[in-house]
Length: 381
Image (tube, rainbow, N blue to C red; front, side):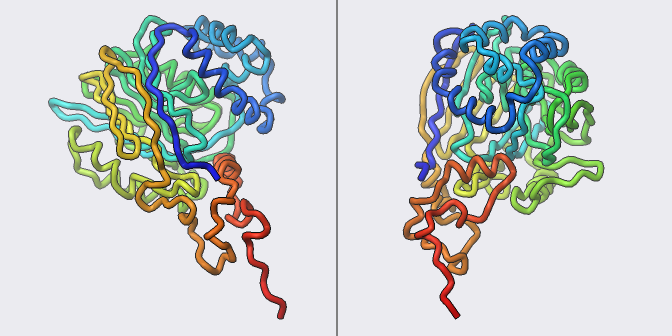
């Protein structure tokens, strides 16, 4: 059984070097297995991947080449790091940005299994601009802020189809490396194709906010309010909306009357906060960005880090989600005695496989992840 723990690291490294190399060495075996299992080797060639990155995001090509070299230079690593037409991946999140005459905040909850997040808060100056954010796919970002105060965060758009495009985390990295305002960032999001449906919320130091729906293969729609969960508009149907509670969470966000300084506390409570860690859907962290102060308040199941672009401090914290309210990870599945599961032996559940299946959109009944001895057989009539 997984220990339901996730170790968060705060790391600063101005240019790609030994710290990033150590992270690559630790994480690549798992990512490589995922990439191969999900058909990544059948994707675009190394040359096509680099050409796509150079065409759409040329400002990142020098950094990309450095990372590929540090990663050992293999074709598979190069294709993986480009994130051009990658295998599909899912997730869940709630996002909101609010501004008034004096303050602005962007807040996000990151909802997934502890098995499926890197737990890395990284500060870099890879293109000469300071960027700080939560890393995914080893150099992309799920959310972050730059030295101009531009803040951005993503949420899965609730549709599993794919198109010709980049992994969204690389696009968010690009936005923070090259943009200073919401207007500039939105222009980039309209120009660069995403390979899946994602919702992106932005805020900048001038108090501008925006929410953008990205379609698979390209296309962007500006939404009326800077809020998002895990579905999109215009007649699209979300994957498993009852499970993710995406409609309920969006309705809650629409009804919030919180100002910038009060926004963050609402994300620490239901229905925005999720605690179904055993089902692969719990809030791993809450990130509250302040564009004016260029700061981040990161909440990790009770622990809080305050970081700024100019005063970044390295550190480490291990969050134990088995102690989270309502998680009691071994019994959080929505199944009772009628399931035939002997929960006294729940430590035998294959939690890592369950988490990976959920992320791939092929979740099964809990009994599928148990040894045969845990599932009671019906008595003969």
